[in-house]
Image (cartoon, rainbow, N blue to C red):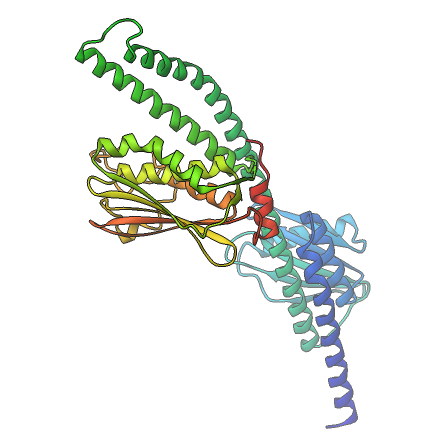
Length: 418
């Protein structure tokens, strides 16, 4: 190898090393850009520096027209218009690879077209003040750097697009919650009136009812209660999705809370001839959690178990677990859940039997609401089931709210104004 060859190899190595160092700095800067124009400016500045150009322009072809998305240096307006016209013509068919374009003794430019499977097509153009003739190696190296830079820009564009879509979703979710809150208020007043008057009639406040009248008013009362519960579930679900539910942890003992909740469910179990039982491990210490949300979880799971159990029992168990957590399980001897349905039962409005001939009513909101409430309290819900034998739902929660939760989980769960 001659001295000239060694010098050339050294120059190429140093040039490659410089490009890699620039990319190391460029990529995180583009990734953290808050606006797409900022990302384009970072990319063009880096390419201009790396390729030692007088200016650099990033052109974007969206399938209809070409936009100058970013500049570095000072290309004149006429040059930019020429570049846009050339890019529009070039992107209509097969775009050639990176190329140098020289204008007899005046100037030259490096054009790096990058054609993806779908629009937008991107072009990097680097301008030089004099006609330049470079080696194929230099051209390939420049093109490689340009591709890496534009890839970073594309990633930034997609990330910003996702942020915008997330912001739009958050806004829509907030509007939905506001709408549900207003509807909830408008529906609660007449529903409470229907429930109250039907209870008064059933109590005989206006005289004794015959069997047919009592049956009809019982249906009215039951329908009002069910509809009110649906309204409440919808509102709670909307607030949870919008992270507008406060967690109010208090010291409580399950030996008081669980029997009280089960006592309200006992008439439902008795009406179907079911045994409703409870076991609390005496080693379970007092809890520090939101009693209202915990009551909702227990009520939803026990009510769901009673609904889908025709005979046998529903059994509630509470026991301490490892790492400062405890487990609430609700086991039934009901119809069970097919294996292919276990992943979807926690989705909103999804039911195992969604046909018009299903035996049990409901909207499919109970389990999704239960899962979100458990997550709100820093826990999780799992289920095991066997068709024809029954199901067991397990809720794992921290004994003290906040213990063992990540900062993000506390942020998601702890913000509420419910």
